[in-house]
Length: 501
Image (tube, rainbow, N blue to C red; front, side, top):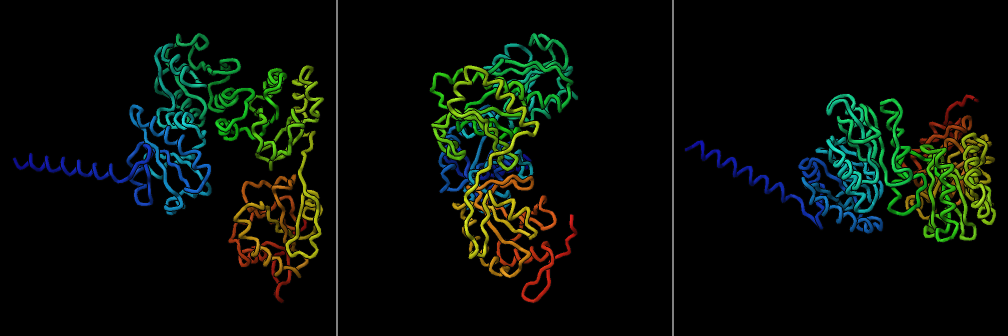
């Protein structure tokens, strides 16, 4: 009798504990609402949990909210249910600091504990969020038995990779899972049967099915991780993608950083012919270049590249990972239209070949030089960067800023004070450059945020040092004392001996 009472008591305690645990976080539209206090508990209570770190004032967060809620509702109805969450990073800054949240919204995916975390790199629509979460939550490779199962999976997904394995568990599946874990666009399935797909009639045969272009691609390489990964990456995107906000993650979130952007009015009669012409170079450089059509509805992108509708159609090759270097295809708008009906595909292929051969020079934007003789902080523009920074025998501390950047505005008075204090040090130049109006072609310059502050040593201008210290006069001064060549400041000697290269 006593044992039964103890057992009942234990069951009651466990039930109460579960109730308390389940009630320890609130929900809004099926999205779990987390705080500094319950964050770890919520992550530990779920096998997987996608968390959005947001700010109430953030416009992008507001745009995401209905899509995120819709995804939350659909995932909750999954079998088994999958939950997603959000946390106000402005009100719960401890957890935001733990995960180095720098912008909003930032989404992170947790698998059972706070130390197993992956950045979310999918799209911002409900459908894209659902597909990404389902892929990351389930097995990396699903084993199937029939063509009917495969057909159902193909119907539900844009890209499906099918492989024949010698056994359901083993080295081949493990290798395929590693490829699948790193690939977000494709769903991976496998079978031990050789009669599911006609093109995959033997072990280690692989076929990629897709709802665009050729419809499918057959892998003919060695069943090795790198070869398989390259095959999937090269074939899982359309040869030519028309840009839209829901495709932004596909375009900018992948490994291919060199994009061929064609700006065009898609309502024109010649558009279909132009799109076909773009597929010529796209096939030749599949996996190396991403070919993207930018319609006139994307006015902000056109403005960024300095284009007006009268300039269209126009093609620009952009190296996204190399300081946003831009290479313009030479044809003017009228000539471009004429080429569409002639040999545009071949000319673009030749243009891309010249790019890979290093024969093209980037087009760099520059403001006009200004008279900064009375200014403590010197003003660099694109046209003067080579002369005043690279060719100069001075140590140069250069701030890349944006006029609208709040952090840059906060830094300005301190940077001015720093420049004033070094005004009599002839060997050091304190300068700034508006990175929204000026571009530079330098291997050591890759501005991804504002402000970016680089120190160009007098004896090694090809290898600038990124300043990562405190943004105050004391921090900058100490940095210069340790990195600049010998100089006098306030009667004391500082700096280091530079060996000439």
